[in-house]
Length: 424
Image (cartoon, rainbow, N blue to C red; front, top):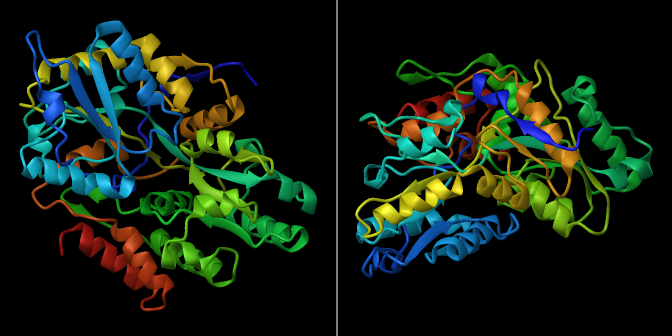
């Protein structure tokens, strides 16, 4: 295994992705603009950066803010808002005309998307991967990806070893879905695990599974979203493994935390993603865990996502906000950020991670070999914010929950999802 992970050629590929798995975090923060706008002579001295999850990623944004303050004298106040609250908070801030100078979000909101500064010059000068940049209808770059994530699979190595069950470490030897289900159930039976595996209650994760079954996962064709038989097949399979106790129904039906279940040591495998690596490295002490290749049916595939750096207009700190973003993407600063937080970069950089190097290299290979069919998720999530009739919520997740509760079959679920995506 090499000592360095290189994320370089992915910008030259067209990934098969959809936007819907990147949840539409949209919107506003009450009383967050005051300190960002401020303004003493020479510009604002304190800017707020509103985001979610920095603590879980090792405080990488907070560390960048501290370094920036030391270099410039400008304070970047990192406001870490719970993921469940950030949409409402930014929405409220937009309504109250009190938006922060900066934010890191996983989706753009139609309510404030036209209040974003143009970051085109920064994207070009700092060499941001063009495959992840989406122009607005008026030709600006309103958001630059802050990081790249990919759906992936973790196993409880201690449970697998106890059960004497092997697992793949090379994508070329990846499980098929049937082999994976058989393996985790064998571990459950022999090692006394409570469940075979758990998947986050997220359309983004389920969409990756659809790609693995050969589906386009509700890709947009022209002006309309569409579905295929493979999407139905995936949901039928998903329902089966929820019903036969391979998976805990409580995660999708009642919102039990899959992350916490895996950390408890009672689940053989966890279908989640690269953003968990830093958390697991720090917080799992009672058993050994490992990143392994995703299972496949028709193709080897994943689903990409990540966050976006944005700067709001007319906060009183417009120029200062762009200066921070420009500094953030400078090679040395951005490399340090990626290393500390366990982030995959969105520009051509060598990153030598201080932990779990093998996991990051596996994610790199999973991304490079991605055979998913469908839209580019990262571009689509930006474009969707400018649509005439943007959808809200997570139709794939919401309709799948109805299916798992027994109120509709897989075919009806797929038909309903298409209608919701198309504005019905």
